[in-house]
Image 1: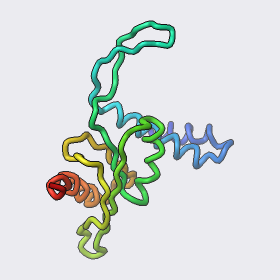
Image 2 (image 1 turned 90 degrees about the horizontal axis):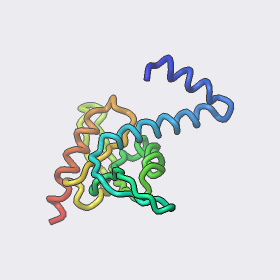
Image 3 (image 1 turned 60 degrees about the horizontal axis):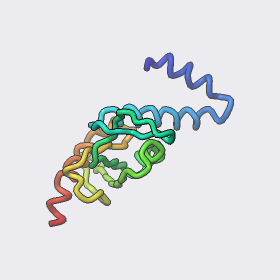
Image 4 (image 1 turned 90 degrees about the vertical axis):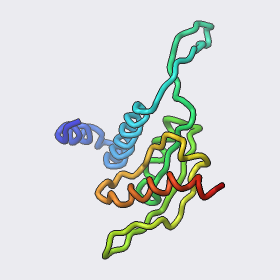
Length: 145
């Protein structure tokens, strides 16, 4: 979506707290597109009228991880799309001088190293936080055993 169309899109929603409606809608669009990247498997869907159709469902093992503070803004969008998805949290703090990140708090779903993880962090200018999160995810199951 081009920046100009985002501005036009946001302008069309300004009649009802436009900033918040636009923010929630943009988060929802990002979450939906992220979910489109997850693996799917075929399944049969039976409608209330008894008709059977071939459909798709998400494979098991998906989860979300939000970086505390900014990433929490995306959690509701993920829950709206996937009610039963497991969501973990992580707090990464960085040194002001060296920009080295360290994990202060982590509550991650069990077996996360074998899951597909949707990282919820809307501020991608701080890449060191994302790198630290990946390290924490890969190392988390090793510390539990």
